[in-house]
Length: 78
Picture 1 (cartoon, rainbow, N blue to C red):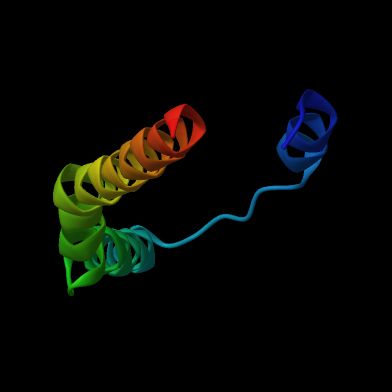
Picture 2: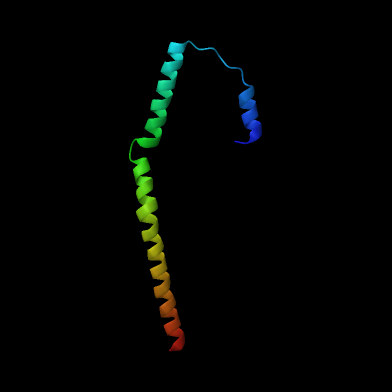
């Protein structure tokens, strides 16, 4: 979103809501937010991938490249 989009959103008219309904809406929205950001395997899997998976993949690529480079250099000296 850019500033133009935000200014258009701020220009939208607001609606008056009964306090009881506003509380219910807020609780429902907070529960949906918590469920989307904390529940399930998604965040855990992303954490594991970033902390374990990426370093393993990078180390594997480096070792494969080094093996290839050493074999290529040895072939040049033969």
